[in-house]
Image (cartoon, rainbow over the protein chains, first blue to last red):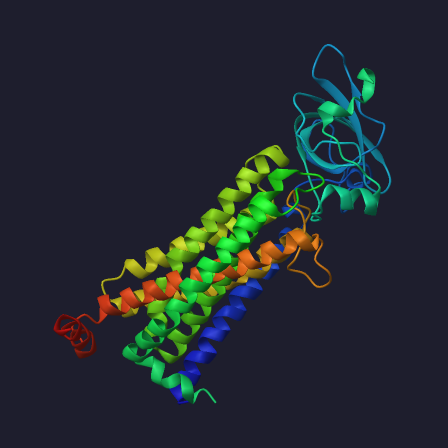
Amino acid sequence: MNPRRKQRLMAFSAVILVVGGAIGLMLYALGQNIDLFYTPTELVEGKDGVKPQVGQRLRIGGMVVPGSVKRVDDSLAVSFDLMDTGPIVTVSYQGILPDLFREGQGIVATGTLTAANHIEAEEVLAKHDEEYMPPELAEAMKGIKHVKPSEAGYGNKG
Amino acid sequence: MWKWLHPYAKTERAFALCSKLLPWCWGGAALGLTIGLIWGLAFAPADYQQGDSFRIIYLHVPSAILSMGAYSGMAIAAFIGLVWQIRSADMAVAAIAPVGAVVTFVALFTGAAWGKPMWGTWWVWDARLTSELILLFLYLGVMALYQSFEDKQQGAKAAGILALVGVVNLPIIHYSVEWWNTLHQGATITKFGKPSIAPEMLWPLLISIVGLGLLVAALSLYRLQSEMIRREMHRPWVQAMYTQQEGQ
């Protein structure tokens, strides 16, 4: 390799390393701010020593606690509990739930913190995992049979 | 070690290589996409959770993987073009960028169409979706820079530097779902360990990925040939090629 090429090779490699390092440090500094949502544990116990304030708008993500979904007969109002590993947070919501909303499903809700562990949600999104399999296999492997929320009939209706 | 590569620095040799590879790429792409998509969209079993809606995976995952694959290819070409100043490599950057941009757009669009029924929203500013959108902007930036200089050498240099700098976005896209909590789920097949998808669903997906990969390669090579002709219109080898064709 002639010296000029070698010089260019060094120069461009250096550019990539420096820019890569700079962006890496930036992302590291932004760190947790890139997270889409708080987990129930972070909400109740604080994240990096900072607890969300009551009245703050935020997103919460967690698993719907089985048996906690309560519906009101004459409106779309619904409330349910979310958990990850410890504390439980209650979410109230008025509106149509996504198709994938089920007990035991991961969901992300956007709303306002009205008490230390209560959120008034404006939007509820369902998360799904990265596993794909036919229904028969899912039933055999996990013993779960998934049903649409409209056919589930839990809460007051059941 | 790299001596065998040197002849391809000459545009006409690279052009001939493209002509040789192109039929294989077109053929493989047609075969792979036909088998993969028909198998996936019509015959693979429905998902236990998402039902038939999950079938959009056969468009979404191949285009998402190829959006990053095409970018890697473009960045390698940019690096070769900048360091060794090989003109065909510069042209390859210009040839791949629009193809990659379209594939990235398809990934974003199918992702949105999948997100609406499953998650309940078209778009959310989580780390995976945002970084993929940045990838689309990087492609558009490379295209714009390449075109915005009167002197093509200058344009290729500027576009090449942007393409190289943008490489840092690739690991961010891939690991975004692990580093931060996101609405997008984790990796199904592009991870170490067993893919978390049933085999009868996995095979058509892999075939579609190979098929789309070959389609991206074919489109890029085709565009590369056009770019070579456009930029070397007055060189003897192009002239010779056309007089030969007319003579036939």
